[in-house]
Length: 221
Ligand SMILES: O=C(O)CCC(=O)C(=O)O
Image (cartoon, rainbow, N blue to C red; front, side, top):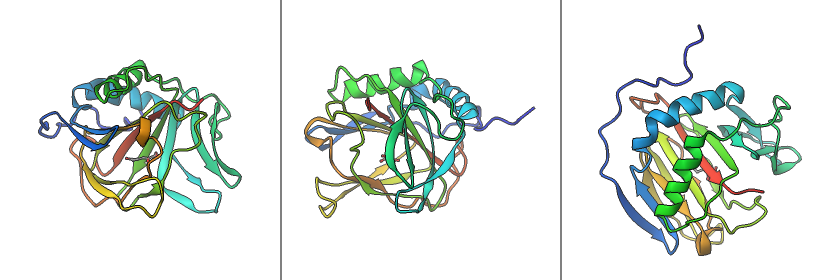
C-alpha cells in the first residue's frame, strides 16, 4: 500500500485564538480560520494530489520555481517558457484538473464572507508547496479575466512571512507572519496589490512535516 502523501492523524499544534486583522482597506488576515476545517481539508487535498501531483514549473524567463504547484477546479494556473496562463487541463497529464473538493469551496466562501466579500465563486485553487528555502517573489495576480472577485489564500504547515505591498513593485511592503490555519483575503480596491513570500525557514510542523502548503483560491475565468 502506498503511504499517504500527508500524515492526516498526527497531533495538531495548539490552536490559535481566532481573530481578524485588517491589513488594507479591503484586506484581512483571518487568524486560525482554517483550523476547524483541517480534518476535512487534508483528506480532500490528498485526493487532489493523487491525481495532480506537485511539480516545479518553469517561468517564461527560464527559471525553475522553488515552489512546487498543483491545482484543482475548472482552471489551473500554469507557467512555462511561453508564459503564465490558466488552463483547463493539467499540462503534465493532459487531463482536466481534479474537481475542486466541496470542502475547499465551502472554506473559501466562508473566509471571503468573513472578510466582506459575499458572492465569491472560486473556479481555481492553486496549491503551492514550499519546502524550507522556497519563496515567492513579489507579484500581482493579473492572469484572471476580471478582478472583481477577491483572492483567498490559506496557509498550512510551516510558518511564513507574507509580504503585502502596494500597486508598484517598489512600494513599501508590510511583513505579515502567517501560521498554520491563517487565511489572508484581499480584494476590491486592494485586489491588485503586490504580494510575495520570504524564504521559508527550516522547521517541522507536527501535522504537515517540513513543508508549508498554501491554497490560493481565485475566480479566474
Ligand atoms: O503562498 C502564499 O501565501 C502566497 C501565494 C501566492 O501569492 C500566489 O500563489 O500567487
